[in-house]
Length: 177
Image (cartoon, rainbow, N blue to C red; front, side, top):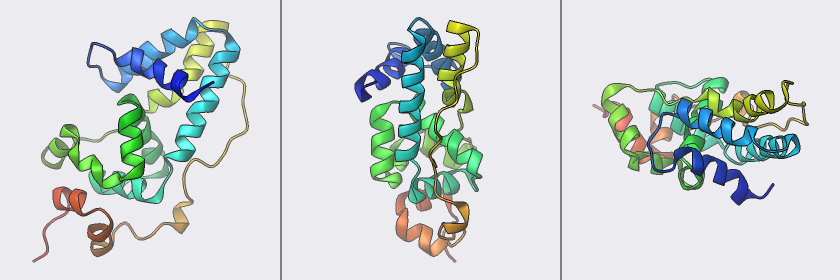
């Protein structure tokens, strides 16, 4: 499956109507379920590639500062939320995690404490495959989709966080005395 084909499924699920990530996942799964099972499997493998590419230390740090902490599963689900917002949002966030400070929802979260997670987006292919075949999505080779938590820099080090993610730090961290 080509990258454009992968993202076209997400684009169709968000076209002309803002939706929650859960609704994006539902629409995308319904779209995929109309295709051959091999295409659904190929879409799942491409999702794995997106997860690998987005599994950067500084993007995890961004999720950590936005949420006030972020587990391994929380980071995966945060990236599901990003994917539901489309190709450009993912690309911009991977290239410069601090650019998340430009998103209105993220800016609002500094006041509201909103958490951005969309586990259901990570299950689009599995749901589509179940709808199309009545069976479980075949297991594929699983690549590491995030750094090992033991190898991360200390996300609680506010000085390092401010250096690496200054705009997000300004939104979410208490100003120094």
